[in-house]
Length: 221
Image (tube, rainbow, N blue to C red; front, side, top):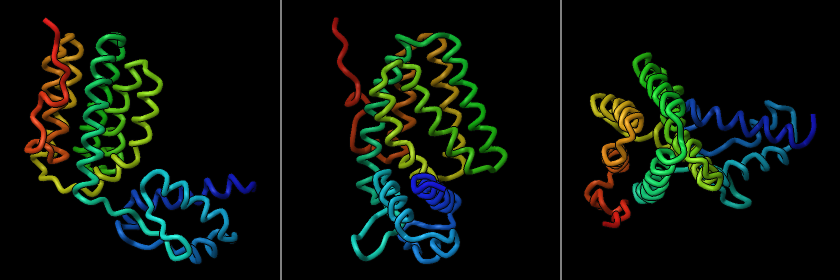
């Protein structure tokens, strides 16, 4: 197996352990154990850890250790602020450039996310939740916006995994996906924007920091 293939395999192995909660925030990565398990040197392991660090999921302390990231409330709110800004732009562009078929696909992802929630499948629920929002940028047709959203994707999944939410709030949160998709199907930008802002401001605990209109560009009259 090539050096890159080994590194990619270790990357996926550690990623799976993080998202299955076998490795928890703040927990150190046992390089020696992974090397023994895979029967490899530490070089591809360290390459995988660097890649995970670039993804924001691993904190590296050079020449000492690597540990699963721990996002502070401030960091989560910073990610949330960026994500809201990107989603508002993505939604507007999606309404401008997307088709009815695109909006129906968005609704299908909302359904898949809600089905996973009802089936108590946390892994799929988080994946489809993140997919719903990245699909907005895909429908927008803006490649750079897609790239920026994808760079946040794993961080968002990580936050979804460790964010404390009450069950009834989580259900309401997921039902809002349908409301956003339905408003977009009807070309109702104002309603879609209002819902997605409620959806994200509450999740990232930003509702007391930013008024909803903070993220909206004033419309010319």
